[in-house]
Amino acid sequence: MQPDIYSRLAEILGEGKQAVLVVVASAEGPVPREPGAKMIVFPDGSTEGTIGGGSLERKAIEVAKGLFREGGAKLETYELEELGMTCGGRATIYYELVAPPATLHIFGAGHVGRKLYALAKEALPFRVRIYDIREEAKAAFPETEFLPSYGDLPAIGARDYVFICTHSHGEDYRVVKAVLSGEDLPAYVGLVGSSPKWARMRSRLISEGISPDRCGLVSCPVGLPLGGKDPGAIAVSALAEILAHYYGRLKELKGTEK
Image 1 (cartoon, rainbow, N blue to C red):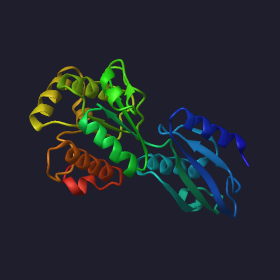
Image 2 (cartoon, one colour):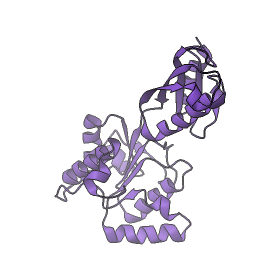
Image 3 (cartoon, rainbow, N blue to C red):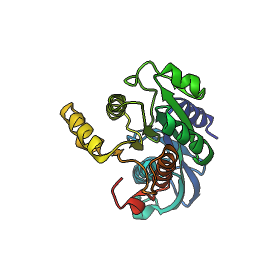
């Protein structure tokens, strides 16, 4: 047992970060470490603990870094001679992504935001939060979290989702710029609006130093093309797009790189 590894994983989750737990699940013949040896791999490839060093550990770090993109867990068996280790033997390594639950952050507690919040609470496999800068919006919808400004956003993680539907184009822009300026970009950004609206915003963002790659994260017009323009229809189409993205089906359904 390595209790410090589990304590460290709890700390990482408490900080809202993610890591991959790597465990020697089984070993046959001469191998660098015994079954149960563990290490933690971070997104930048740094580690804590060890499964024995050498080619096996380098391979494990490579596979673990891929798991930050793929998610989930996997089990891999390696013939150590094939990794260039003269000791021979065989090792089976278990990998598991350990990450806080994703959150959908809805900015704007108007008609669309409230509809999406209600639907998402029922359908999404992660947390949902809704924000507004208007006191009257919070009074009308108590689940709303009040923000003093859309330029000062709550912490948004790399696995989180963002949906923007504030009461004005100016505030929409403020949220988009704040999100795209963050150190950690979310997995998805949806913006209610038309193609011309987004073209103008994108041009302004780039002129103010936001890279085209970061702007490419934004989905606008938002939602799968289900039809309908009322708040309920927009919320349903947006929820469908968010779910498609979460389950890796969005490119297939929209025929885009989003």
